[in-house]
Length: 167
Image (cartoon, rainbow, N blue to C red; front, side, top):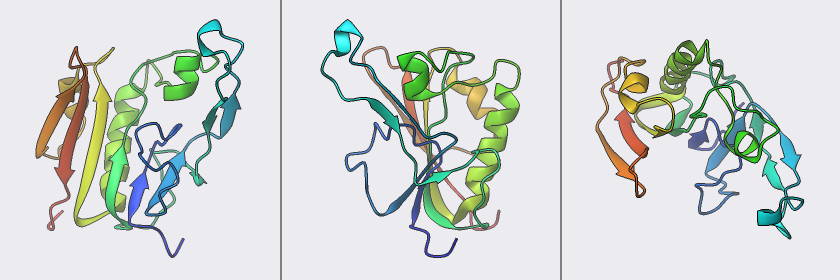
């Protein structure tokens, strides 16, 4: 895996937050590749299918990249547990396992920091729709730099981390 771009989106899904959904500076990765037709839904009539089309298929808990491969990692894992992947929401955002979400997210943080270069940045995105941010942040021993709540109800959080040079 030589010639990796400087950025990894570890759970890209449909790349919904990206301004340029094919930005060459980023390796878009996810655990699945699929397409879902939605134009049969009255509210979605005439819309294009939803797509999850990563450059690389991987499990964010066990990524195939060498240590310290990326300058910047985006970690936007699923935010809800046990939602049907056949629903538009489940397809779009993915789902966590109700029994293992803590272990899964802890392993995801560990992997994101493992593949991050020293002094590299990790941006973590989380929506508190089911699980409070404080519970998720307790799954890593890394200290966040700063964060931002967005949206009218302030449920979506953006949290920045830096990989200290000595870790």
